[in-house]
Figure (cartoon, rainbow, N blue to C red):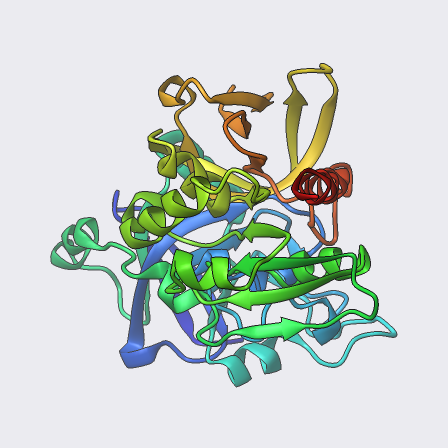
Length: 366
């Protein structure tokens, strides 16, 4: 049994569990408490940079049963603040496994807690909305709970994204894609490479002029953490790129939100966000419904979209905006993750749609 750890929410709810993984720094830490409903893919969740600054709770009760598999990671190191589970498997069984969660979290300095009633925790967050919380070895005090209201995740993209330019070459590449990294998942690169695209990954501070100097066939806007409206510098640079009429742009998650903000739309915070692999999304043109993987706490306010932007996907559960296409230049974006592993894989065809736009743009230039 690990040391007793208290999870305390800003509404005063206190849950008791046992620590594993790394110890709490200075005996406590603070983060935004969120839940994710995926039954598989916990490694992708743990290593998704979009969870920067968050204490992540898994609703599925048993986590860790297939161990730690580095080839499934979505980033080099986890960016989440802490990890909450009902039960963690101490003896994983999988021919691909290279370790267990406890050892992995210790090596990555990530605290984790087991024994929490994660389904009750999820009910609280669904009814009252996402809120801040903290983990501590000490029982809560009123003063400490009141202080939670002032917590805010600052400079999230800078902490989650790459700091250096990286290039992935492909023999006889069909296209060259500039991937603007705001906290990109590895599988975005894998999907592009599998379609014979060479990829240049760029840090978030990259200017529009530097991106244009690469002469890419297309621009990919990645996923990432935090409030999209905080990224004013990126939005300004993106506006310059949107003025280039022949540059195809494909945005995912945070990239989707930033593209909308660059066109003058607004974003809003959802009550508890969409996190998990079971979010139904409807394509408005066909009426077809796809199951998608999602991880976001903000959404584009569709009522603020400009005339050159049209909604193409909506969330079946709450009607929120899940995709936008633009008529003033070859650009579209989606709130969900078409590159998701371990799935669902329903919307991978969107990468092919992006390739088609790049092909059409190339022909138009000839």
